[in-house]
Image (cartoon, rainbow, N blue to C red; front, side, top):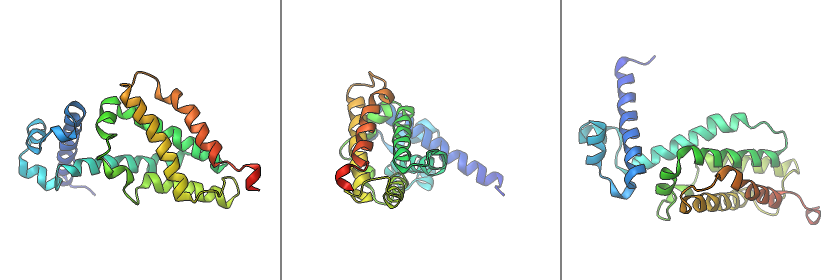
Length: 196
């Protein structure tokens, strides 16, 4: 059972996080300081460091929240029995999630020096890897790539779509635009005559 102290701690951490995200959206991660975050959140620098070891931990929190969303919401709600269709659903959820984050946040996160995209063990990738591995075992997805390679391939394509959307300032509907790319990924992962 949560005490009032636990609830207050959670609210304080969330306040710092939300204000940091707003600053990232407005100015970019590299252009803000811990002091600016604290001023905006109306907390002391010591309070910031009590909840976050560094400014970079705000990025970790962003990715942790997205991984939690995919683990606890998306994965539980994939409806298809066919693994290849689950991949399709999953990739659409990825694009919808990106769109929900907003173009300003995407522009700040989809940069080459953000290595959190390729951090090993992230739920977002391991969930897709499990779906692909299951599909290969059921003979619903091609074995021409390992599950890890297929996940990397899928995310390279999807991140390319997101990056294109970002450099075009979100000027088009990314969900509709992504359909043909998701189809291409699924087509590549499907079992072809030569695989048999």
